[in-house]
Image 1 (tube, one colour):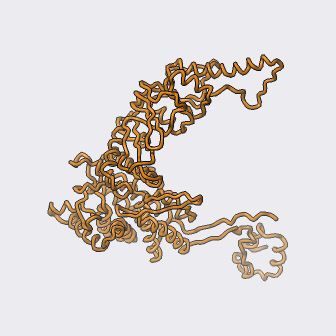
Image 2 (cartoon, rainbow, N blue to C red):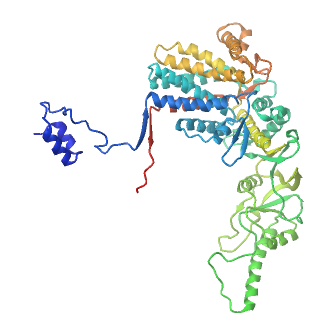
Image 3 (cartoon, rainbow, N blue to C red):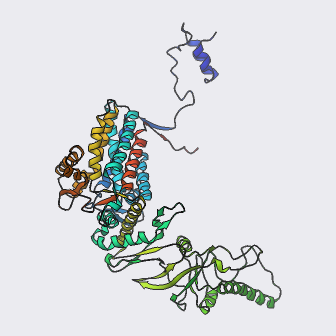
Length: 585
C-alpha cells in the first residue's frame, strides 16, 4: 500500500531511481506528505528551461530602463526649439531628422519592451502622421511612474485599471472642454494647423510658403465617399524631390501627377495634348521564344522567315496599341530600339521602367487599366480603347538636374504633386518627412472638423482636471490616476527645457491660469483654458488666438496609444529568453 505522493511520482521517475530511493526511505506515517529527501528538480521531471528567466521587480526595472533610454533620445527633439539627430546606419547612410518615428525606425532596438515603443511611434505615424515624439515620451513617463507605484506595493492590475479610468476621463474632458469646432474660428484654421506642425520641423523657416502649398494640395484631393463623408487621402499627393535652388523654390503642381523620368527616346514629342494613356506591365521588344523552347531549322531561308515573324509579332502588338488611339505609353519593363522606331514614327511619348507604385497611381488618376498581357479570351491579342486613360496634357520638363514627366488634368480622380527643391539630399529627405506630417495633420483636421490648442495647453488642463478626478476615488486607483496626471506634464516641461527656458516657472504660470479657468466663475478667466506656452518669448499666451492649433484626433489617439503601450509593458512580470539550440557535434 504505497502512499499517495509516491504513486503520483511513479509515473515520472525512472524505475531505478524509484527502487533505490524508496528502499532507503523510511516511509512517513502521513500518506500525503513526501519525505524530506525527495526534493525534485525540474531537470528530473524533464521540465528544465533551456534559457534564462527574469521575473518580478528585476524585469520591471529592466523594462523601465530600456524605455526611458529611448524616450531620452527623443526628448531633445520635441517642439519648435527641438534639435535634430544624425543617424548613421551600418553602410554609412546618413539621416538627419527630428521626426520621432524615423529616429526609432533607424535605431536597431533589441530590447523587447523598447520595441513596443518603436511600434507605437510607427502606429501614430500611420494613423495620425504627427505627434510621434510626444506619444513615446508620454508612454515612457507612464511606465516609469507605474513602476514607482509597484515598488510601493500597489498591484499592477490596480494601476492598469487606474490608467484606463484616467485615459477615458481625459478623452471625455478634451472633447467637451478643450475642442474648438473649425467653423467657430475666424482665421484660416488649416494654415494654422500646417504652420504648427511645421514649426518643429526643419522647413519651419519657410512655413509661409509651405503651409499654403500643403493646404492647397489637401483641398485639391477631396473625394466624397458613397456614404456622403468627405475623405482627403494623403496618398493622392505625390511628393517628388529635385536637387538645386533653395527650399523656397518648391512648387505645387495642382491637379497633376509627376514622375522623375525622361522619355525613352529624344525623338519623341515632349508635349502631348489631349493625352490618351496606355499602361503596360510587359516588354515591348522583339519577340523571343520562352525559356526551354528550341526551334530546330534545316533550311537557312526558313531561319530568315522565323526572324521576320518574330519582328512581325511585336510590330502587330505595337500597331494594335497605336490603332486604339494611344499617344502616351508607360511600361514597367523595357522598350528596345526596334519597338522604339514604331513608337517614334507614330509620335507617341513613351517612358520605360516606370516604378510599379507610380504606374498604379497613374492608373488611378487617369482611369487607365494596367495590362499584364494583350491576350483576350479567344487566345488572340487585342487592345481595347477602353483600357486607355485620359488627361488634358502630358509633358516632359527639366527641373534642376532631372527630367520629369508631368501628367496634368487627370480625368478619373484628383491628384496633386508637390515638387520640393533643396540644396542637398539630407534637406530634401527631411523636407519630405515634414511635408508628409503636415499633410496628415491638415487631412485629419478636414475630416474630423475639430481642433485643440497646442503649446502644452491640453496636457496641463487635463493634468489639473485628473488631479481633482483622482480625489473622487477612495481606492488604490486614486494613486494611479494622480500619477497619470503628473506624467502628462512631461510634455510642457520638455517643450520649455528644449527652448532653454525655466520649465518650473513657466509651468507654474500655466497651471495657475488653467486652475483659475477650471474653478473660477469669472467669464474672463474662462479664456485661460486656451493658454499654452509661447516658446519664442518665454511667456504663456492664448494658443487659439495665436494660431497654435493641432487636430483633436491627434491628441486623442496619442493619449490612447500611449496608455495602451504603457499597459502592455506594465503587464509583463516575467521575461524568459530561450537559449539558441546548440549544434550537435
